[in-house]
Length: 288
Image (cartoon, rainbow, N blue to C red; front, side, top):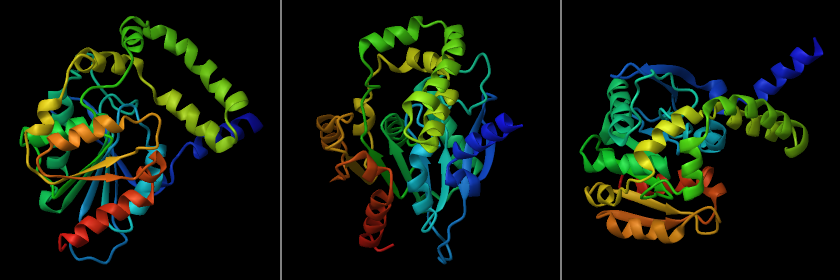
């Protein structure tokens, strides 16, 4: 009985605050796949509030965005979209994982939700910023504002990892996964919350989807996407973060025709209240 109780507690710790209050559903897209979205209505008293659509980066899990989502719901209706490489997606054996399909998914979710794009702010990071740029350049969406956190022109993985993803047998991950969960729970994490967070990232990892995605993205460059639109964009840098390429962010900012460059210094700032403050300040300066 105690073991079952501990497992239930662990599962609850692995849920973000936003998941506990959001409406969760799966949207069936045109190729038969189903993608998870989470929605919340704003606490704001505005008669026609803006909607903030957050599209997380490659394999990113919702716990990493919890602070942003909880802050955003004070001012916006919120939609959190999980793309098809995520563990939550329900895909078919014939599913395609190229840029056209990823972006069509997002477009169809916008249409499903009947979003008034004149009152939409799209917040994206890394891989998902690349997807949003593709959508803007192909006139698939036209939001009031797009915010790119650390945009990239290609998936920045070393050649060795790209090769490993290509040759890695999927069945081996099923063996490694429980070992990894046990390790982070008992030897790596500093407390129960962090153990749950790390374990969830392992649980939701889906190497088969990553493998199919890598086939289409690892050798493709997306410079042209950033040059192909004139929609307003905030390009946000994380110059202090060692995992972030500031030079790349600055280069992409120079390519975009109608962008404003901001440096929030750390990943912590781009994943918490400061990024929402920046968006609200821009809207206020725009007379919204």
